[in-house]
Length: 183
Length: 145
Image (cartoon, rainbow over all chains, first blue to last red; front, side):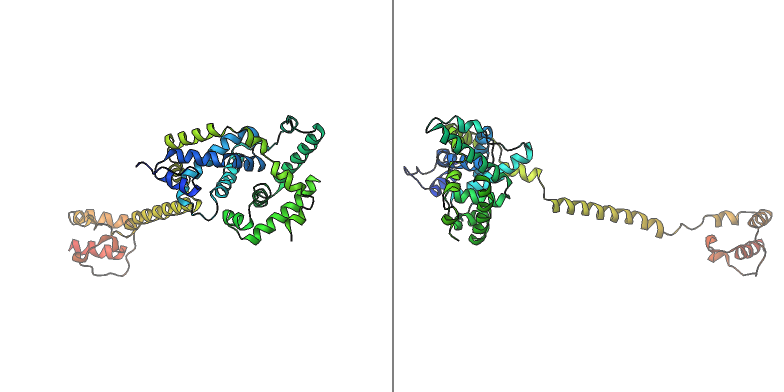
């Protein structure tokens, strides 16, 4: 591979992707550093076991870098990454057939704030996680991309291959069902 | 419909934002980045493996169909020649002409066919398989002179 042009101090994702294509390994590492935590949150929210999150994040990045030639910039790199993460998680569940569990002790171990508030907040998360498990995949991913990641419907629709209107409908169906779990 | 109105107390959205936060905090980002780069450098490309190991269902069905059709064509090409290839001309004609009159008569009796209409058959258009018993009798008689 030919040496790549050095990238700017805070390069865009597109610049890093181009640099990676040109053989610049540090560009790939920088993309991982930039998006790994958001991806981990998405995967954990979508039902990944805490112990599996690290491996799933790695696998998602590997698949993404292998498939970068098919990324046309229809959405942000991070959003595209999360759709790949959804596929990786689905494959992992299919292989393991393990029940998805969000451990309650993680919530209890938090050290900040009032213990009672922490417990209540932890219970709400546990219920939301349980509710998300019951949703169809499309509703679950639309909800997470919207409510957890704060994305616009246009962006979500582009990433998931649907229309903004349909994404909006999925979101509202998801919210309607999840409120029953969380209240 | 207003999303924020749907989540008027903001509770669901707030909980959703917290979801997975601890898993993200625990992630060793630097170690993950190095692991990804190392795997990209050392592992064979996944898409090659995918092409080799996972074939779409329609491709497998098409392959099976080709095999079945191919086997059928081969079977037909083997059977049809067997059915249509003419039987080699009887070599018995030569042997027959070498028989004596008594031997021919014995053969005729062994055939056991009653004498029907007598037909003149020339030895030149002889094809023993095509002859009926009366024709064969006539032939034998003509050979006897």
